[in-house]
Length: 164
Image (tube, rainbow, N blue to C red; front, side, top):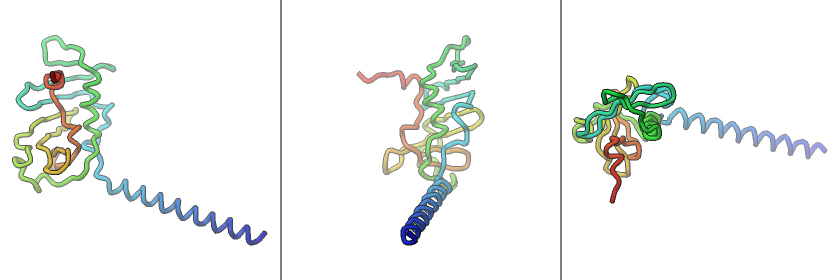
């Protein structure tokens, strides 16, 4: 009986040690993760402005649970699915951050930016694709991050054009 008890206690000690190692690894990974583009929760955002390329800026406001396109004299309902996609950009995972001063902003397409997205009072400027991978440079304040190209915003006009 003593031998079985020692074996069980040893096994319990190994399990506890493995759980501690897993906890440490997860904690370490979270601490070193670059995070997201903005510290905003997408569902808390109430104003969106998108300037993509040479297209006129698009302005949207959330009223209640619905989004409204407010560029015209009379606001019209906006496509909530499209706005959800734009809002998800705030939570886009960043692969790496560097100070903006580390780059020549013109060389990476940020001076001028190819697209500019304002979410409430935060501005994201989108530049060129990176040389490797399907990624794009994004300036948020004084930092430049690299995110997946799928987070590059498109104007409603270009998003509505279907290939033939």
